Length: 177
Image (cartoon, rainbow, N blue to C red; front, side):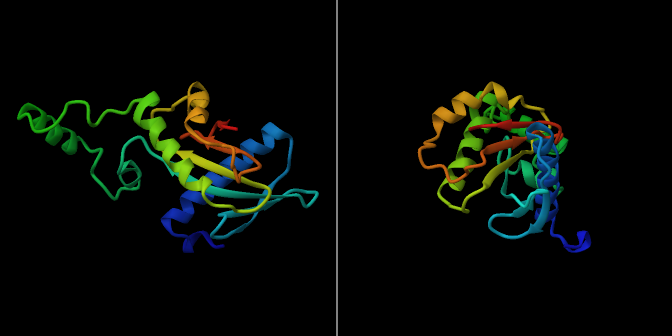
């Protein structure tokens, strides 16, 4: 797949998959590489012994529209939007904390919601769910892994290779299960 012909979504998925594979290989002592970018699951990978690993990629965000803002399609996080919000707060038309992200609150709730949607699908054996954190706040997901697991029913988990979170900087991965 030529980089010039990838959509914005595909470029984000590819960067996420590449970062994940690099960190996963380092952590697990494996040699997986991306073979194909497809639709469902998003990536087919293989190692030097022809073992397969399939990756389903999704993103999480602190607040709705954060991904669009990160991609330059929304001014939701601009200084102008913040000034507008503060003016509404002064007028009593907005709550001062509605634009605030709370790691054990709305951030974790969004993650749980994204995972629940993916748990309803089955991509076959040797599949991992890889979630890209899009928050520049550098959350330490290991701090909330247990509470996220408690919020999910993982008795039917189609991701036999795990549910993983890739940090915003793509320098760490966190295993959820």
